[in-house]
Image (cartoon, rainbow, N blue to C red; front, side):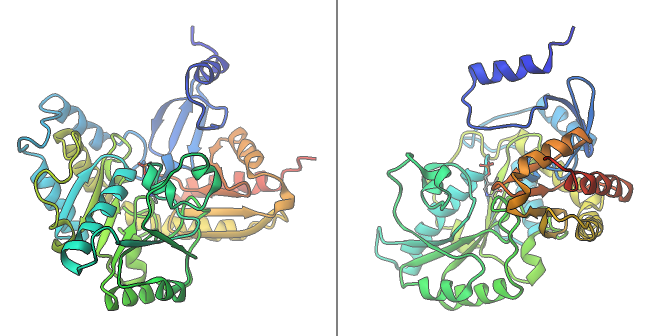
Amino acid sequence: MRPPVTDFITREAQFGAQNYAPLGVVLSRGEGVWVWDTDGNRYLDCLSAYSAVNQGHCHPKILAAMVEQAGRLTLTSRAFHNDQLAPFYEELAALTGSHKVLPMNSGAEAVESAIKSVRKWGYEVKGVPDGEAEIIVCADNFHGRTLAIVGFSTDPATRAHFGPFAPGFRIIPFGDAKALQDAITPNTVAFLVEPIQGEAGVVIPPAGYFTHVRELCTRNDVMLILDEIQTGLGRTGKLLAEQHEGIEADVTLLGKALSGGFYPVSAVLSNNEVLGTLKPGQHGSTFGGNPLACAVARAALRVLVGEGMIENAATEGARFLDGLQSIRANTVREVRGRGLMLAVELHPEAGPARRYCEALRESGILAKDTHDHTIRIAPPLVITHDQVDWALERIDAALKRDFS
Ligand SMILES: *Cc1c(COP(=O)(O)O)cnc(C)c1O
């Protein structure tokens, strides 16, 4: 007999650190856009593990690559070469137009690695006095949970009582190129920014912002680091979100969907200059670049491109956005989105977004509230026309729900 759902939830609370507040659903299976709970109820996944499963749950080709590689060779450490790393580098570099790749595991590790690399570049190439490098970041950023990163967060819950923090970061408003111009000093080595702020509630900067940012960074010899861990790999309807403004970052960070959700794989991509400053022994990771990760990532990239998922994100994203915008509910303050990175912001009087997510769950959709009043909607990129319409019907009803 299957244990009741409450049993999983109580045991999680009893034995685990309670650093999350999940919806009351216990999942045990996934396929494509769908997930099933332990009672056999089916849901359309509109979170996609924060965009890590862009390719859909348990994609058969990624699964096959993983199983095949797992039976052959999983981990060698970087003390030796392995036969998956070179093709992974080559394929990822070709796809993204990068010169060099640094493989890591989690997104936060990619961010940390980029911070280390641009600082080193600043001292060794730009000529910044040792220990004085500055990195500019944006208010309401989300770049992960390690200490250096939470130290430059502006979210109190993220920072409180975790200090002391690393110095060397300056915070400016997001979407304000003038603020960037004013914050740059001779010691500025990089500007680290998300193309669209995901965790902040899918905040899209004004048109032209990144063109201006690119110019400022080039003119001042400042490395532009785009954190595309969430926006990248098709989520916004382009391979990389930078393509919406036709710019190129100096350093690009990927994670999440780089493995299609099978395994933690992240990467720092750069020109020769930045990653070129790292010499043997100066940075590393036991699992970074392991053959299993490389094989999984290669398959994840292959299906993303080969099965038209990026184009699908653009078409179905436009349909989804259009549908959300035509919902006439007085709970809705604003609908935002690009590709399949969508959000519905509620009026504060509508009450917490969480209860709308609970209502969505009852109707077969899993979505996650962010920052109290915003519902984020980001299904796998394999979603079909009919599934978008199916979701829209249910979202429409949930947003009109009377909780009084
Ligand atoms: C998720 C995320 C990260 C952190 O990735 P982890 O794998 O959770 O460490 C960093 N930046 C952005 C934009 C993200 O969405």
